[in-house]
Image (cartoon, rainbow, N blue to C red; front, side, top):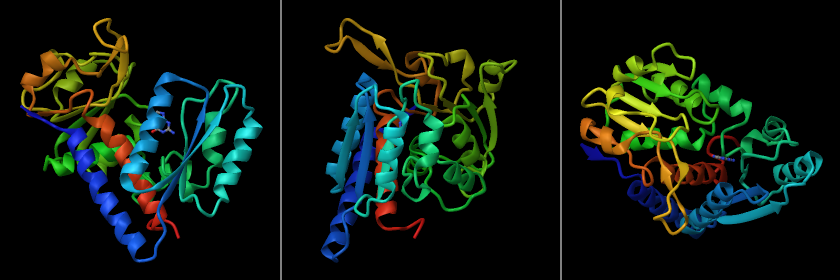
Length: 292
Ligand code: GUN
């Protein structure tokens, strides 16, 4: 069994990005600039956004954090999106999800100029991704592809089973894994209503778990020699930890790891790659690489 080290891979990629930024700036070009909009004080969102700002620093990007309280109106948030759409200095921006219930996430996502949508959540980017056109690819599936590539894990023709059908992970992952240009694999997507999810999972050469259910994947669901990618990061109470919780993946690591050819740990697997891919998308936005 080989551990896929997302933390080290992400650090190496951030270094590559930082070097490229310095070359761009030395040649008289502009430093990429990411803006992040954070609504409220959700612990997870605060951490994610803080880490995104830190990653910008590590990559030599400019960053702007815009904060609103939970009671911000949808109209105020839409006005903020509009300002960022027209802000010449800002190359790309994200609105951290989830948003309070009185705000339509879909309305906010669709208000973002797709050319600055470095999250890759806008329907134009999702649609372009689905038909294999240049676009911003959302960070988690892009990070998983990058890990598979950098660990030289063959995906062509292999059976890939994805657990979960979310818009952020399961659906785009399935699209990318089936495409000739990316995974070129045979793809099955399982979800809460799948008749025999365990049987499907056991047939996977590459199993990608994105259900958000701690330790959901047990040893009886994994074929010996499979590659297991764990996207889950649920905070579970743990009195022995300083913060009172630990991050638990969707995979029962202790049980499953000995069976695998490769596995991503939690933390330190997919998570660090996600923020790193946001940086890659921001660099592409700064360079106007995808959309002029
Ligand atoms: N919430 C959880 N993951 C993400 C993400 O990748 N982008 C945004 N904007 N919000 C999130």
